[in-house]
Length: 323
Image (cartoon, rainbow, N blue to C red):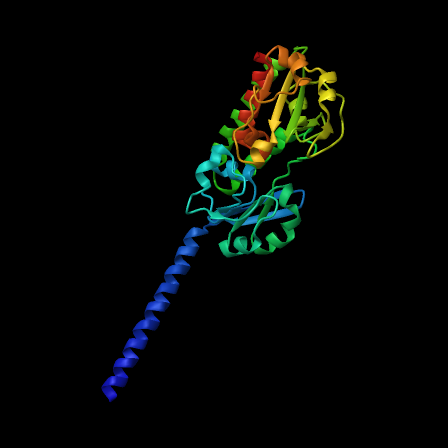
């Protein structure tokens, strides 16, 4: 009887020891996953001041621009919103190691909490969650203005790259990416400089149109890239100013950039010139001269403020001048 009690005691001790060792192993792993920085990284942004004292290894990404930044810097993503993933990040959509955190406009907060992140990246679209998220983990807000990008859009992208470079010890790579952006912008300026052509940016949505002027989410195209606007619409807007086909016809742009929002929302290929049978648009100088660009809707609509999307966008702006 005493032997049985002693045996049970030994077994219990063995189990407790194993649990204890497992706990120590988990603690060691967590410590290794969050190495302290030589000195804190402080990021000042429009929503506050974020202090990061450890190198993040469990990053929650709540916007596709942020996902592209990390992809370009070679930083692993632990979880991200996956409702609308651009084609250039498609591999993350089904990646089993990247948790689905819900929608861009409405992240699944329960899943964010379950991920137990040590860094959260957001944009103005998720700004209303900043206070709650900051209570969970250091949260950095990307100070890009999606309503009026006329001033500082490219600068905001580069500054955010620098911040992420410091956080993840990728400053040299971030600098390379900034140089690539600068080179692209300079390329566009060389093309647009002195050119008389005017351009109109419109979004197509199930047969209706919105126009984006110098104070809109695409204002930086006119400001930073030197494109001349074909319209005097000046209203600050995220979704553009609703316009008619007659408006586009009267503006008569030399170049017409068409963003097919319907393609994004319905997850289908972007429409082509043959599919757009609008007779008034076909009477514009842009259409007659073959300068209608049906742009990459993922790059222009889902993102437009990241390294990859800016490169695509600038290439397409240039394409409008080449015909």
